Image (tube, rainbow, N blue to C red; front, side):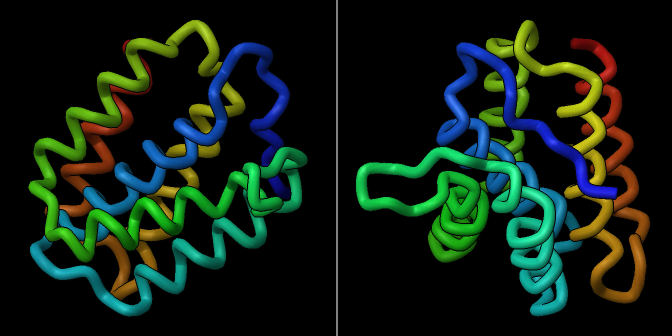
Length: 140
């Protein structure tokens, strides 16, 4: 079953997708290496779980859900510090807590788990990161 997360008034979805890309980078990089299968899982999630439900596009006509993938790739290319990227997501989450409902929380966790499970299942460092993310999400 696909999860629809795109009906909350007042939420800047472009920024949401960027921050989701940040979070997925943190999970994929938590063991020090981003695997090709993790990138493929991210793309699959965007195409199957985000794009079909996102009805808005940016000024160039591109579906805003693709910002998840673009942001992931950009910070991976820049080799961003995972802790800084994680803090960016947590700050965004806290600032927008009133827009993040249980359906959105479930979608975030689903995306995180899909990326973590993509390469030889979830390892210890990835699981620790998932647990940390789940704790943050439960606090809002």
